[in-house]
Length: 387
Image (tube, rainbow, N blue to C red; front, side, top):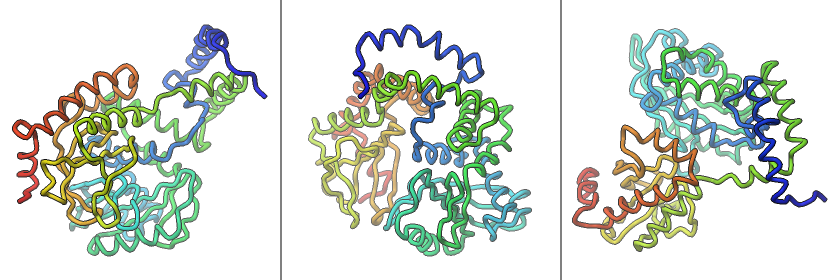
């Protein structure tokens, strides 16, 4: 049995950390990765799907998103992963009216990434791309068949591209679902021109390429040597590194608890949507999407508020039918529309220091929701055209 850690162990480790761990890795050229990323302690499927959704969406990622989406479709057509997509139409055509949905809710599940777009060359073609992303687990039951049925029903006049994304191009078990792997994603990323884009975004893309090569064993020689060095460090300091990593705060849970507590103090009912589209009280107190109702809109049974914790944004949502919504952004919980992305990234990086300030800002916003005279409810109801 391993000996329990003591305060002195942590003190000794802290004194030696920069000299014996951080500096050798920085000198080796891996200065943008912390030791935990290099050690590949955990693979997170959601992390990949979230970042890919960001890259696919030009409204969020700008010109680089347009590049990524077009190159993705070009390589699909070239490698015959989308037989109904013409290579030259894709190469020389224009892509417009892109909508990207993350975890698209349907009756029998959620499609990881759904992309709608128009491809125009000699004629306009509507295209829908569905991506089921499985980093570690296999697909459950016949979920791909259910997703296919949904796509053929809801997108009758679209070119339909269904992709099963795994680290090793695992078989989907369905002819309609083309298998792709993260080497395919890496090939798309390598085609991007990042010379004239924002430095932060360029760095993110380079780091993501390193992450793919690291997690899915596609490293170059230098990165392989760095991994060996990192593993040696881990082997010699395993107990302390595991302890430190386990102390890392889960910013989603910490944030969600604060927001749920603020809402409960105001008497709000936190709810979930059941399979029939009915809002029922939720027992979970740290959800990523916090849905809640308040007395002022009780007469509107198909309306609820939602806080997207990941985006730190407040929405008013109208249920059109089970699993289908009309959403209207009311307010960001931190910063303003120009500063929000930077503020949220700062918050994520410094969550323990900034939790009090988030609580203060959110409390003011939630207070306004419950103030019938000054709140956002009347305007939001009018915007959603609710009688």
